[in-house]
Image (cartoon, rainbow, N blue to C red; front, top):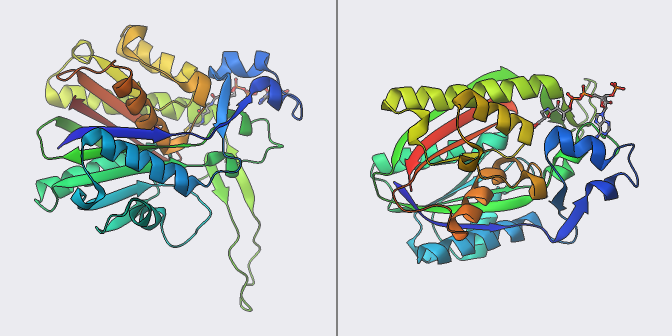
Amino acid sequence: MKIVGTGSEIPKKIVTNDMLSEFLDTSDAWIYPRTGIRHRHVISDEKLEDLAISAAKKALDNAGLSASDIDFIICSNVVNEYITPGLGCIIQGGIGATCPAIDINCACAGFIYALDIAETHFQAGKVKNVLIVCAEEPTRMTSWKDRNVCVLFGDGAGAAVLTAGDNIKGIKLSTASATDKLYQIRTLEPTPYITKQEESISLQMRGQDVFKFAVKASSGDIKYLLNELGMSPDSIDHYLLHQANIRIINTIRDFLGQPESKFPTNVETHGNSSSASCPILLDECNRNGILKRGDMLALSAFGAGFMSGAVIMEW
Ligand code: COA
């Protein structure tokens, strides 16, 4: 398959580090050097579904296709206002498509997992065009009293349209169960029979463990693929990594021994928007003319699970 269109949508509300320090014991002087984040876009009066639908429509427009051309929608989403139906169903109606839609929850690595599912459908000959939409509002998962976590995240949606082609050179997915490092727990409706103790817990993170996992998983996934394909890190033109933290990105870059110019970033202005991060960055690079047809791209993402994945593709 190949990517023939991209789109993204981010909330209009910009929250700077200085704005956070008005109600949290934090500062730009702490956040920026440790994360590379200056500000993030946070949902206020928007609905995530509307951002997702807008990103999807932009990707279709960019591809020169209409909703009726799409055979399958894969939506990557951790939380939104609906528990059911899935966000993919809402997007399907919102863009006027009639094809099947599924949701996946692979946290920040969702775009790579969605690409893998799409590639499998192409290989099976089941689809001609697929729409992937990654839409996330992690700012609704964190406690805004918890300076350890809430400063890291922003919201948004990114989408990609795929059609038949031979541009995906390889995809590597990795999962290593670790439920105590990065997690959120919600309570469900009570029943007369529930006797166990239950409590809602906002997004919790062991930052240094997550940092180490991210570097190891991402550089490992990319190196695995390069090795499988008989390629060297030098043969990749652009590395589009999950925008969680500039220090994570720089450490992976050091592992790969590659120049900064190959690593476009937007973490400074977006923060970590979970699975939306990679497709938003891809869309920005596509629209800014950074990506040229024939360029070799490595995308890599990592997050809760722990789940990670990488893809090497020709643009
Ligand atoms: N503002 C000010 N101080 C803060 C703070 C904030 N926003 N958040 C934490 N601190 C404090 C801590 O309370 C701690 O104080 P103490 O020493 O008095 O106990 C101190 O800063 C150091 O905390 P620590 O967690 O050791 O900092 P760190 O150097 O590990 O940096 C992260 C924290 C979160 C920036 C870093 O661990 C990281 O980037 N982890 C990966 C996070 C990530 O990307 N997650 C998503 C992946 S998908």
